Image 1: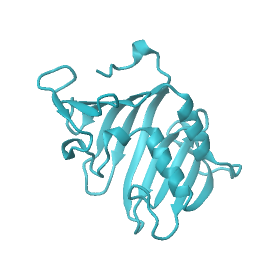
Image 2: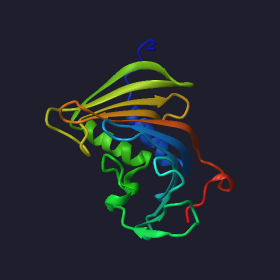
Image 3: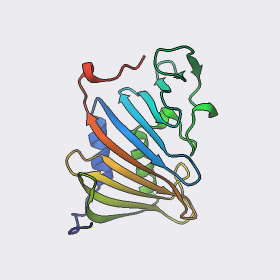
Image 4: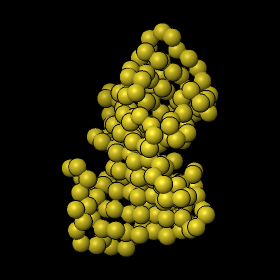
Length: 201
């Protein structure tokens, strides 16, 4: 459902400013991509770059935690705090996503940096106001000029929640306009109290 056109503003820059101001967030990520099994993860982020991923599917129960201080990822294959625990590099293929995503570049800030870089070598279109689930959103498309890609992406479609300004859905395409991935961000909570934030180590 598309409503009246929105003002011509830089929703990506607004989202970046909102991300820069937050201390942490938790969200359920649901990712689908061609030829790969759907992925669902409870995702937590805390500045200056701590990441926790608790897998719902596939690999149900597995937990990854990345610390920028050590530059390493802890993997608990059978649940946080259980045996065994493996220490891995973020570029280990064992823990990369179907599209080669790395845990140390998985947060909303990293996504927005890629989108903004593509903006600088392409066009941005504000499509209009749309409803995604229970969210009122602003639908924006960023398309790189012919031959230009960022992190393998030539076109992003983003839906920014009108209440907090961050994306709640992102779809990406490659240089040949083939779909790469669609990610839904459900139950996003920003600046979660420490007592309610899942631990990062």
